[in-house]
Amino acid sequence: MKNCPRCRAPYGIGDAICPMCGFELPAPYEDHDDESDGYDTGDFANPYPTAASPVAQEHMVDFGVYPPGTALGLAQRLHSAGIRLFLYPPLETSPDEVHLLVPEPDAGAAWQVLSSVNLKPEQMTILSGAEVYLTEEVFSPGTVVIAEGAIVEVLNFAMPDPHNGASFIDLTGMSLAAGFIDIHSHGMLGIDTNQAGVADFQRWSAEAAKFGTTALLPTTLACPVEEMRQVLENFRQACAEPLPGARLLGVHAESNFISPEFKGAQPLEQIFPPDDSRAQAILDLLDTHRDLVRIVTVAPEVSGAPALISWLTARGIIVSLGHSAASYDDAIAGLEAGATQVTHLFNAMSPLHHRNPGLVGAALERDELFVEMVCDGQHIHPAVISATISAKGAERFIPVTDSLQGVGLPNGSEFTLGGQHVRVVDGVSRLDSGTIAGSVATMDAIVRILVERLGWNLGEALFMAATTPADSLGRHDLGRIAQGALADLVVLDADLQVAMTIVNGKIVYTR
Image (cartoon, rainbow, N blue to C red):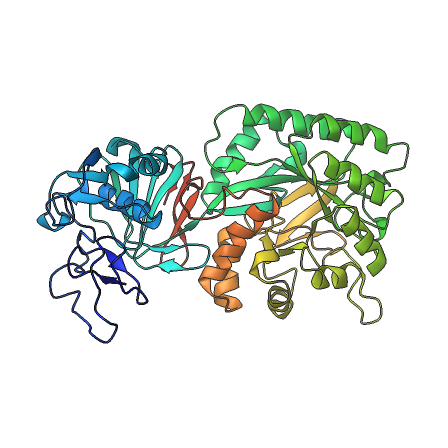
C-alpha cells in the first residue's frame, strides 16, 4: 500500500487518481519513497489528510476528540467504508488528542459507521504486539482493541500505549487467537457431566479456561431420564449465575439413541431406539429443555432415527451421527433428514470399506457434514487425522477432547463412567475391558499435537479449534478475531502454552 504524495491517503497499485483528494497519482514505475518521510516508521502515522491541508475546504463535522490510536482505528474503519475524513492535528506531531473531522455531506454515513464504536478510552482494552491470527491471515505484529465484551478494532500494526486511560497489554512475542471451543467433553478434574452439580459446572468453566477453552458443551452419556433431568436442571441453574471462565454453550447429549454394537463406553442398558416405549420420557425432556440441548448424537440406522432427526432439527437441536453401524445409505438418509455433523469420526462406528463405505465414507464424501475427531494422539493414528483434514478441509474438521473427569488427575487415577470402572494409565483412560474411554486431553494440548506432531500450520490448527466448531453451532459471533465478534481470546507463548484467556472481554486466566 502506498500513500498519496499530496494528502497521504493510502491507495492501491491500480489507482490512477487518489480516492481521497483526486490528485493524479504517479504511475507504478514512478515510485516514491514512503519511508523516508517518516510515515511508515511503525509509530503513529497519518495516512489521512489533516484539516489544514489544501483539500480541507468543505464544512466539517467534528466527530469528537480521541487518543491517537483510537483515532487511527476509527479513520481506517471510515476509509474502508468509502467515507472521506480528516485528522487534526496530524498524528506525526505526536498529539495527545486528535479530532476526527468528516465533510458535511458524508456525516450521516460516518455516524452510521461510528455509532457502534464511539467508546470512551477507559472502556477499552488494547492487546498489542502479538501475532494476531485472523480466520485467513496473520497480523504480525497486530493490535486488537476490545470493549464491552466485543472486538471493536483489529489493526495491522503494534499500537504503542496511548496512556489515555485504556487498559494496555503488551503481548510482544506471543500469539493471539480466538479461544478454543470444545463441543464434546464429558468432564475434567473429577467433574463428570452426568453427576455434576451447580458448583461443578461453575468450577468446570473456570478450569477449562486455564487450557485456552473459552466455550464448551458438557456432554452426557446415555442415562435414565431422571439423571438427565437433573443434569439439565443443574446446568440451567449454573448458567443463570455469572460464569468464572469458559462459556457453557449448552449440553451435548451423546444419547440413548445409538447402536448397541458400537456403544463404546456407553452403558448398554440405557441404549434403545427412539420408537421404544422408554424413549418418550427422554424426548419430552429434550423438548422441554430445547434451549439448553445443543447437540444430540444419533445412530441413523436405528429404528425411527430419520423421524427423530427431523423432530430434533425442527426444535433447533443439532443432530450428530455417531456410535453407529450405519450403511452408506443409512448415513445419507440421516443427512437428508437434517443431521449436520458426525460424532468422533472413526471411533465407535463401522470401519471404512471400499465396497461398504458406511458412515465414515459418507462423512468424507459429503462436503456439508462437519466431523468431530478426537485428536489426543491415542484414539486416531496421526496419518488418519491428517488424511481426514485434507479430505474435509479445515472448514469442516472439528478437533474435540472427548475428555473425562480424569483430565488433570494423576496417573493411575480411577473413577466410574456410566457405572463402569475406568483407570488412567500412561495418559490413556480405559475400561476394564481395555476399551479406550474418552480421553484426558485438553484443547491446548490438541492444538500442540496438530502443529508439532502432525505438522499442520498453526493458523489452520487454531482455525479448526475455534472457528470451525463455532460455525458448526451457528455461532458466527464466536471463534474468530474480527470486528463485532465476541472478545473470547487465548494468548499462547512461543511453546504454544496458554499464557492468558479472555472471555467476553474479561481476563479469566493468566499463567
